[in-house]
Image 1: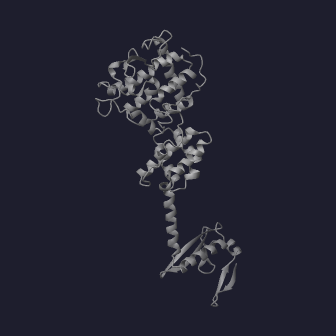
Image 2 (image 1 turned 90 degrees about the vertical axis):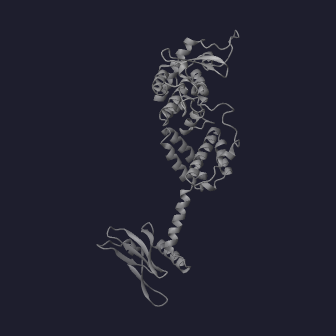
Image 3 (image 1 turned 180 degrees about the vertical axis):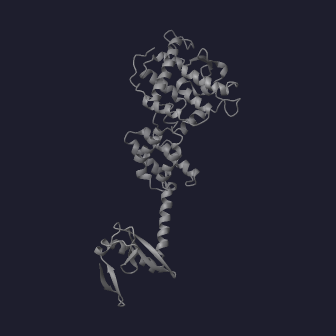
Length: 417
């Protein structure tokens, strides 16, 4: 149904009504129901109803889409038509204006922090444990995107990031606040690499919040987090040499420098022993090797056994870089300042061996090569508690395997040496 109206010049037109639009039926060919001032409803053979407006600009005939009925009703379509006519009167082509506006919106969106951050997370997803990806996404979704997500990444300032961190810190989650800063920083570095930012403001925030853990080396000390770390190490995609070092680091829990400088001459795989000089204390040390450690070393021997170092660097005459372990942990998504560092494997072993496996503190300290005199004043002796330490190291390796496999070993009891 239509109603008759007239223009000021006396030209009669037929204006659409809501009933006419609602009852419009499709035909074999597209049907055009005219309103006025160029607006019409196009009914396609498949039943779709599209609002269109014909207009002329710069001597050319053009058509502008106004949306789909019933999402856009008759009144809304007329309002869109009137806006377009006002633009034409002002010398603006409404079609080109719409394209430019859409392009600008997409450009802003593509440079928004959330879009870039999600892109970075997907890029990172291929090289980290799935659990790490999900935890990072959850932190950013809950604590960052609501405040920074729509902001152009290049416009975000250090005070804005600090405000986000403080909001998290004030609820008692200081560790998470530091973790968020690290992830924001990684996102900025990705944006810089892809040409969408020129500077990372996060380094300006060092010291803005107190550290999450005193001055100790970052360490994971709960079985659940340790299990996640072990699975991340298993999934690590790097060189075989570094992967073996990562697998042995939590199992042997020696100082990082001692591990990376390990020499084949100091190993007796048949006796399952590693003997070397601890340069920090100038004492001889003996590390009993669990069967799992021996298996890893035998596999690695086929590759590096003809050289001096167990973990050679690019130059086979030198050990791998002192940054290799920490760099690998960062690639897996861990912050080596607040979560876990190469040195942190020692704290992880000390804590879990005592609290979960109930090993004697003096046996653990001896295996850590800590020079702690006994009641008689006797300093460290590499063979002291050797029987207990051998049993403890095998128990520890077995426990790590169970953690990695997801077994319920959190309440393991009765294994004191």
